Image (cartoon, rainbow, N blue to C red; front, side, top):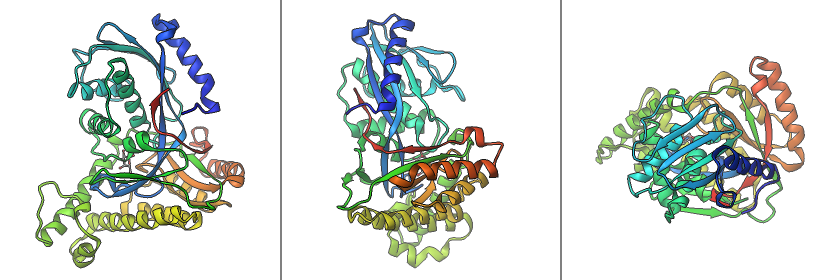
Amino acid sequence: MTLHDNEIDCVEELRNQVVERFGADPSQVRVVRSPYRVCPLGAHVDHQLGQVTAMALDQGVVLAYAPTNAARVRLASADFPGEVAFDLADVPARSQGDWGNFARGAALALQSRYVLHRGLVGVTRGRLAEGGLSSSAAVGVAYLLALEHVNSLDVSCEDNIDLDQAIENGYLGLRNGILDQAAILLSRQDQLLHLDCATRQHRRVAPGPGLAPYRILIAFSGLRQALVSTDYNRRVDECQAAARVLLDAVGRPASDPRLGRLTAAEYAAHGRLLVGPPARRAAHFFGEVARVEQGVQAWQAGDLATFGRLVTASGESSVSNYECGCAPLIDLFRLLVATPGVYGARFSGAGFRGCCVALVEADAAAAGAARVESHYARLHPDLAAAAPVLVCASGDGACVL
Ligand code: GLA
């Protein structure tokens, strides 16, 4: 895996900081790159054991680190103030809003399965922590890979997916699925990751012949908030309430009901039993499952126009059925959809705050980004300073360089 142009200077600077700040031996300094991700189709179905699609971006979190002989971790960040320090033998509890949570969560998750003899000193940088690109899983994966490396642990991608999910579910308290970690660990440039969250089987779908050159627009709303303090977990409950009714109706009651345990035919037969929010969440789930299937076929056929239409339909379902948007994010979504050259757009990630994602013709990307940025600034002048639109490309999954 090669570094992208935008990362070369950053990596050198972080390496130097590890040496200067922590006195590390320059020959011992290594670097992990852990990308941000997008999920064009398959939003909010991972926690219900549905199928998702994902891609890593050519932008991500970079962590330069060196091993220490003591079992102690010391970290600095180019983006957040202060230093994080803790002993592996005595990892402190989560502290609300503290960037050190991810490293502490990673150490605890690993220690539930392995003995960590060595700690590390390190410096991180992740420019896009505003939400929607899964910066939290990218950071968590970066710490996991670095701690594994300094402890000579050989951990499979599948186990790292579990470990990172343990950080998010256990240490951070977000009841999310495996979309983020899987995308970050398993993606390959220009391939669409297709993941079944029930069986955890995945495949990388190569773009069909003739798939037009495209770019990925990331349009920030300027709204930042940790997911755990949004309605994310409440939506998971509402999906489970729907699943409980439907599983009871088909005679398969479950103690941990998930919509993915039902077939589309069962939903068609019994969906009328659902009312209110659970009815709308189930409508989103089953619509999204069908869109993922059609989208994978369109990608394989090199048909970005169809793929993009499905992405926009998924975005509309997030607004009306999953009800996870907010006014500025919905404005941004509609602006993107109306932009020349855009194949399709939707909220990125959970969609309560953060950014929208769009697939756009490569030649139209720069002009589209400028157009969306200026229109959004007119609609939301108060948010404009924190609402850039970036032109990205797809990238590779996380690794130690
Ligand atoms: C967040 C969660 C993921 C997934 C998406 C929505 O990114 O962390 O697990 O549920 O939202 O698809």
